[in-house]
Length: 397
Image (cartoon, rainbow, N blue to C red; front, side, top):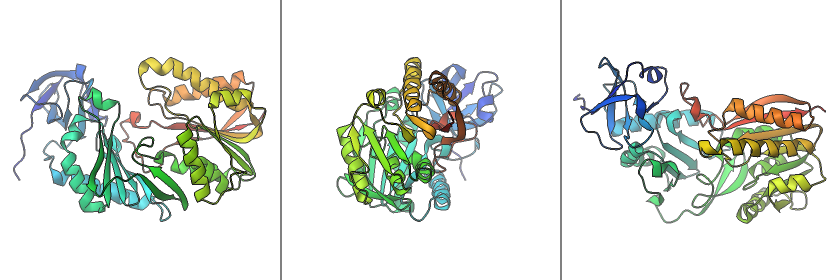
């Protein structure tokens, strides 16, 4: 085999250690020099200060993260076969962990599956993907060929509209790239329950697939409970709680569109509106004003912190919302609280919830820590990939 010769980046002394530990990123300040005039998105060979090869990966000189590792096998040819092989491994893993009553899941979870900047979600026979890096953008045709040949979808829809694309020097792109026409609203099945998914204009790629396991867990705990689902979006947690035997589930969201979708999803699963009301309301205001207490409260807000400048304000927001929720928990009631903000680290989130409990003068037990399901794997050396963190708590007093 003839091995391709790649441009090179030379790292400053000692800066290769992160790569050797399995972290996939090199920041711009760690690069001493560049050889071969690589362009944005090109594949380069990273070498240490003694000229020994460390890894192959994507290069972008215009961003803080200037190198995103693909493999430590420096002799590898990054060809279509490389991507076909990686996709095969990811698909084989999902076939092991996704049950027969589920046809919607994450197929490619960016660095967690060895595809820096690529997300691919499966919605029955439709695939939705998002590209966030210049390197992956240059590999798009290889990725599409691999997806078509291995999964044989009826449609592939692109939702490359994240904030990071601008940082990477890319324009936002959306639309059908394979198959017929606009996809619009699809019906999926998750653990035997039905949901409608708007892959064109819904949040993320249309559905919060990362909460599948947590929805199942919380649904089991909702028997005979009065449940409040805050930031309900399209009502997935509410449907699981109704299926789990909750006496009543109140779903809150400020979006009229989300509330309509939540009602539709409850109806799809034969749950009557009178026992499962969907309320269009601001969650903060609702919790401050309501006189009702609940046996189970779910807090799954959108990301409060999208930049480092947002962290302090976001922490106040998380504390306030958890404080109000704790006040409306019955004795013995449960709180499932989440943060999907990458910049809110797990330890900080724990401290925020602890401070909220202290201010509420409540004694809480931690039943478990919650995270994304196994179809959202995280590379062992890349803790930043573990963006979803949650706590399942019980109020003792």
